[in-house]
Image (tube, rainbow, N blue to C red):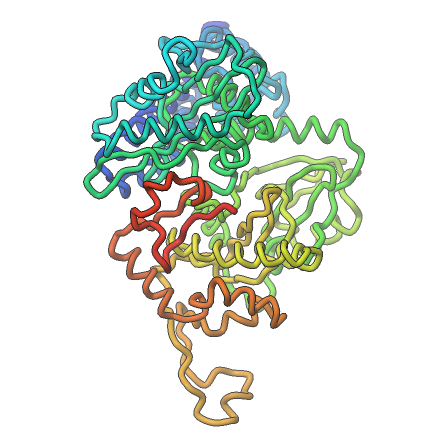
Length: 590
């Protein structure tokens, strides 16, 4: 292939990426407008359209290549030239790492998997993204020693020029200043480099806008994230000051929806966020910024690196066997791998395609900190000698449609990957009395939060919930998930006779979408002591009235407030705003 032809193809691919990222930024800017106008429904739609946009742009680019160069997929020999030409085009590109991922996505649609290597695609990163900067700085610095902390905070809050007026700007600045001073170590020295650094654009999610900052003092770097909410008159107010790494980490949890933020240089935002959340990997941060395809690229590179430097084998995950998903794990790697089985054991009746639709629903929906995000992969090749014999036998017996054995490789055609958590049933068996009480309470809170987001988990057995490293309860089994608004919550009618009570079948009619909350108890906790703890905090979840009330709230178009940080972090002046009403979710992260 001529150098000119390779360059044309490379330019077509880059044009496809630039269109994608341009639209990505437009959706993120639209979130700003939605926030100012309190258009929460449009905010949700824009978030979903942004997620779908990547695959659409890849498809458009592949079609453009096939139309202009029909032979582009016939020989893999041309792709090293295309990659070299593309590499040249990226020399001064501000989203080079994401553009490399886009190139891989296009090439992998065209090429056979035998050519998924660094010669043909960006198996390894080609360009460094360190110290990239665009037309505007990614963050701005403020100097309290020179101008005073209060004045700096005033400039930070007013510097974004939101169209909404403040309820009480002086009050909010004072509350922020007090929170920062209270958090400062009593005997800590203020160094000459003491400063407040603030990312240049707001982060939007649901009904909140967030100012993301870091406090520099000597060699210490501490987070400061400022949630901005608005009242019914669209006046804005500062709701809290998140100064603990744990709180900020939960805000950016893998169990939450992606943020909407306009970034000219994504790598600069990831670097900034890494400094205040060192426990978060770039995979986590790119995903939370809405760049989940880049997160997938980094994850896959990390997995291959780990396989090259480890010796343990993939094995069936411990715990209760799933009827729909075959779950396996690599003990030295903190993720689980989930395949859809070829056939489902009764009483499961869903089809393979329906299960995939459920996982897609979770990807696009607000996960409110209670649904684990998944990375979805196709055609993943693993050496056969890294597969435990019992896992290989199980794959062949129950999931043969999802695998292909090619020489010394096992190719997994389709797999979901989630962060590994300890199943709630196992956690409760090992927990101390205090830990058990906290987990049972949070289990009920997880159900409340999901309901507030219009999600009914379906199968609410404890084995389908996991406990994270921060001891939060998260749901991760999605094959029976559905919308609250699609359910009919009914009361069980009185038994007509003793025979009705002891019968194995119900004495009342049951429709396909009927749900009977009174029957949840045995599924939740067979142990009377555990059930007693649950009822102390969440007895109303066992009655249809609560569920129907929540359903009516959602149908009325009201967005239930679920705070992504502990309610106790909220400033006292904001706790009387009506968000903590009984029956609604309070977002307590514990």
